[in-house]
Structures are given as structure tokens and as C-alpha cells.
Length: 510
Image (cartoon, rainbow, N blue to C red; front, side, top):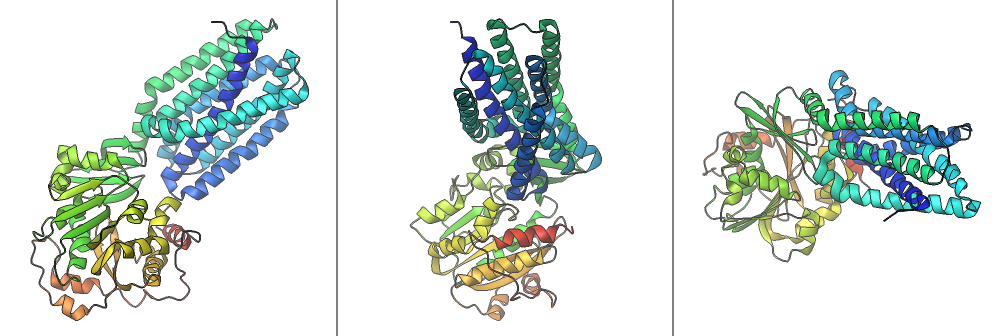
């Protein structure tokens, strides 16, 4: 079936919308991956890209000769830059340590080239003798339609199944096709162009994109390795996060989106403190326990030491994370195959939605989320979220949440405490020393007042490597420099994400 030249041009316009959105989202995502704070990075990257799109549109008015050739030249250049955008970003940050300059620079270059597309393709469309209002309507509508398609493809197909590197290479190929379709539509229309020169551009562009496909993964792996001092032994991009496992001698470290989650050298200090401390606050060992986050199964491993616990429900958004820690032999050795235990039920769902829909109650809730370094995670440290926790907790029960560091992120730690208190909980704050992290903090919430002296006298009867009654008691002493009820610190709400500001402001010094 032959495709008319104007239809080929329409397909090309649609694809410019797709590629433009995918390029913006890819660069925004890589910026968020390296520095966190996704709202800020998406806002800045997309803002910079659109600003330079305006610059590109402005430049287009000075292009008067060889419009067809120059459009194909610019589009081919965009295809090369798009294909290598993520690869270059990884490599340049690996050798220089600079986290944002190169991303913003690429955003400006890509934005300028995207900005040239629509004005030039509108002028190409004039050769089909289309009325001005119809021409502009057609070009803009197809471009906008492509933007929605690009957004959907990036969110549900490209990022989760291809990863950023392959997405950028595919993006380069799409831009190559845009140039090719425009060229074919010009030829079909009988417009004379320098075909030899254009074909040379196509050959060069195709070879460069092909080289990205062949060598891209190796370059990224080499560059990413430069970001970590230890050898990367496992890497996977899931629908929700980038998982990396490194190894140094017998020490394995897990990183999610570049953030350290645990080191096998000392993770037991963290998980014993997280799990066994709140258990001592209970009069009786609960029959039903809920774990939110903690897809690595380490917290569940500690809970399984209590024979009286009949069921443990683990809710973690990332099914690939829980699958990995259920099936990988090495990772199962860390959590002692806890996720496969018959007392454990794994549910892959958003914790906020689970608490909203759940009808049963739990005697103990363990919350082990990553730090609130973006708006999606911030939601899980809000007044609204802790109200749902309260609704799912037995009156005599308690919950605990990891709360960042009371030393490195003091304001964020206090904000979490005050937010829990705002919901009506009695809050008990403590910390523990984890060498791979530093000093780390937790907050326990209870509807009943608890006598700490009575709790400290309880004997920890299950086997532990680190935690003792004496250590637990000392963990509740935070020091005079941490003012837990600092009036200047505000509570965290869904529509007023104060915690995000406190967290990001604190960690810039470390």
C-alpha cells in the first residue's frame, strides 16, 4: 500500500511530538536519579528545554535557503544527540563528578533543535498549498497528539521495560525516521533537493545511532561503575526504581536510585533496631503484623524470630524488588528466604492505597520506606498517611517508621516526629548507629502512653547480634542539640510538603 506524501509528513509531525516529550522525560528522570528531588528536576529540565525550544523557534526565522536540507540536517543531528544523551550524561558525570551541568546543557541543545522542528515543518507543509490556518492547525494538533502518545509510552513501556539507555537510543532512531519520512515526502512531491548530500547525512546518522546500540550499554556500565567505589555485581531498572548491588570482599551494598539502602556488613544493626524496639512496647506479641516497604525482606526476617506472630503482610510497590529478593540465591541468603515463609504474604501495591482500602487491623506496623527525597515518597510521611496508619492499627498496637538521620537531617527527623504527633499519637523517638549510614533515626507511634522505664527493664528474648536492653535504652538518648519539639518545624501534609524542603536542605551539607 502506497502512502501519500502528505500522510508521510503527518506521521513525521506526530513523531516529533512523541520524541519531544520522551526526550524531556528522559533527561528529567536521569536528573532525578542522580540528585533526587524529582519535582524540582522535572520542573527545571522541562522548563529549560521549553525555553530553548523558544530560542530554536526564534532562530528558525533566519533560515531562508535550503529549508528541506537544513530540516533534515537538524533532525539528523537531533537523532544523534538523543541516542547518546543518556550515555554522554553517565560518562561525563562519571569522569567529572558534576551532576547537573551536563543534563541542563543537553536540555538546552535538545530544546533548541526541537524548537526548530515545528516552524520548519510548517514551512515545508506550505508546499502542499494548504491554507495558513489549516496548515498551523494540522501541524500543531499532530504534534500535541504525539506529545500525549510519547508521555504514555515513556511511563508505561519505555522506562519500565527498556530503561533509560535503550529509550534514548530508540528516541534517536525515531528522530532519524522523522528526517527520513520528510525526505521521502519531499521526493514524492517532486521537489528538487541535493539527494546525494542528504543520503550521506542519513548514512552517518544511522551508523552513529547503531554504534550507540552496540556500545551504549558498555559505556553506561563503565560510567556507572565510576559512580560507585565497589564493583557492581547486579543492576536492574524496574518500573519504579534503579536497583544496584555492589560488592567489596564479603560486603554487599544495595542502592535504590543511587541511595544506599543497606550494607550486609552492618544492616542487622538497622533492622534489629527497627523491628525489636517497637515489639518491646507491646504487652503481648501481636498475631498479625504489617510491613510497609522493606521489599528486601530484612525486616520480615527479624519478625519471623517471634513464634507467636501468626501472619506477616508485606506491602511493597515494586514487584520486581520482592521477586528479586525471593528468587535470587545470594539475596535470599541475606534475608534467610523470609519472603518465601508460609507465614508471610507479599502484596505489591502502593502502601497509601493499601491502607485506604484495608479493613482489618494489625497489632504492629513496621514502616521501612526510602528517605522522602521526592514528592511521591513525601506522601508516605504526611498527616494524611499517618491517619490511615492509625485506622489500620489496633488500639493497643504501635507502629514504627524509619525517619532519616537525626544528625545529618535533623529538621526532617523532627518534622516526621511532629507530623505523627499531630495525628494524636504519643511519639517515642530513638536512633541507632549504623556505620555504613551513620546515625539513623526512628519514631514509634502509640495511642497509649508507655512507661519507658518499664519497657527498658524488659528482657529481649529473641536472638540478636547487636541489640541488648542496655543498647536499646541508650538509643532513646538523642542529646541536647536535637530539640524534638522545635516550634519552628512545621508538620508535613499532602498539599504542604514541608518535609521535602527540610530533607533536601539538610543533605546538601553531606
